[in-house]
Image (cartoon, rainbow, N blue to C red):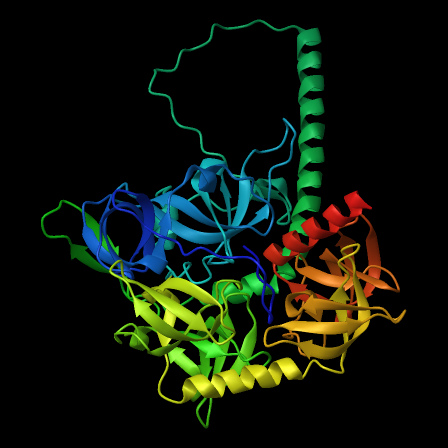
Length: 525
C-alpha cells in the first residue's frame, strides 16, 4: 500500500471489510469514543450492527470500525506511531483514546519497559505494550475522531487512566520529574520484624550503602532530566501531530447520565464534535482527497485539511459533503468520483458500468482503469461535473512538459535532475531527458517538481532530499534549524545543512517503496 503526496502511487489498496462475528473496536456515536465489540450483522456496504461489551447494540459506519488483530497489539512500536490507548471506564469496559508514541523503552534492566504516549490533551502517559493498539494512519485517515471527556481528571484520580508525570517537591527542584508507580497493597497482615542489634561497624556499612544508593538515584535523576529535555525539544517540533490533535479538541459540555434500557450499565454521554468530513478537489493535480473543513471563508471558499495535515483552499462547488452524499442512491451509468485502484486515498472521475447483488459497483475511470468498489468508496457527481474534472486533470498533467524536475532513474533507484520533454499516451507517463542526453519514460509518481503539492516539513518527516550535489534519496529529518535540516538517508549517510526548500515531503509508505526499489537495484549492481 503506497501513497505519494499530491501525486499518486503504483500499488493497490484493498477496501477494509468487516464480517459477522468479527472482534472489532468501533465508535459509539453517542459520545464519540471507541469501545470493543462484535459485529452482529453487516446491514449494507456502509453500516454494520455492533454489539458492544456493555451489551448495547448500535449501528456504526464501517469506516469507523477497526478489526481487532494480534498484529495491532504485537507490532513493534516506534516514535511517531499512531495508537489507540486503552483504559477502563467506570463500568469496567475497555475504552480507547488516540495518541502518539513519543518515547519507546530502552533495552536496559534499569529502565522502565513502558511506552510514553502523548494523548489528545497533549499530556504524557506511561503505558505497557499490551495497552496500546497500533493504527495505520495512512489507511485510516479519519478513524481517529474523538471528543475530550469532561471527567478526565476525575477519571485519573480514580486510577482509570494511566498517570502522567508528577513533580517530586521534596527533591528541592521543580525541574526534576519522577515517574509514578503504584504499588498494590497486600491483603496479608504485616509481620513485625525481630529486633536487630547493630554495632558501629554495621551502622557505618549501612550509611555507606545508603550514600551509594543516593548517588545512584541522583545520577538516574540527572540522566532522566536530560532525556526529558530531549523529549521536550522533539515534541515541540511535532507540529503535524499538534494539528491532528486540534481536531479532537472541542468545548466540553456538562456531562449527562444516560441509563441504558434493558442493561445494568450507566455511561457518560458527551456531545460529539461537529466535524464536517468532505472530499475536495486539489488544485495541484485535479484529483479529490478526503479531508475536514477547518474554516469557512467568504465568497464560498473553504479551508480543507487532509489526513496528512496539508491545508488548501477550495471552492464550495469543488467539495462533496460525505454526510449529504450518503443519502444519495447511485445507479448504473451514474458519474462519480471513486477511489482509484492504483493510487491510495486518491479519488478520480469514473462512470458506473454495473451494479452487483453484493452491493458492489463496477466502474471505469477516465484513464480507462477499471475496479469493483463499494458505495463507501465513491461519491455521486452532478451533471456536467465529470467533464470539468477530466479537463482540469488533463490541464494539470500537461503543465509538467518543459519543466526541470527530479525523477527516479530505474537503473540505480536514485533520483536525479532532468528535463520533462513530453507526455506519453493518455495516462501519467512522461518522456524525460537526462543531462548526458539519454532519455527514458517515467511515471508521475516518481517525479517531483514545481507542481508537487507544497507542504512544510518538520522533525521526523519522511522526505526526498539531495544526498549530494547530483542525486536525491529518500530520508528522514532528524532536526531542524531555521531553513536547514539534518537528514538521515536510506543509504546510511547523514547530511547536515540540507536546504528545506528543496526537500519534498513523502509518506512513510512511499518512503518504504522507494527504499525497497533502491536497495534492490543496489544489490543487483
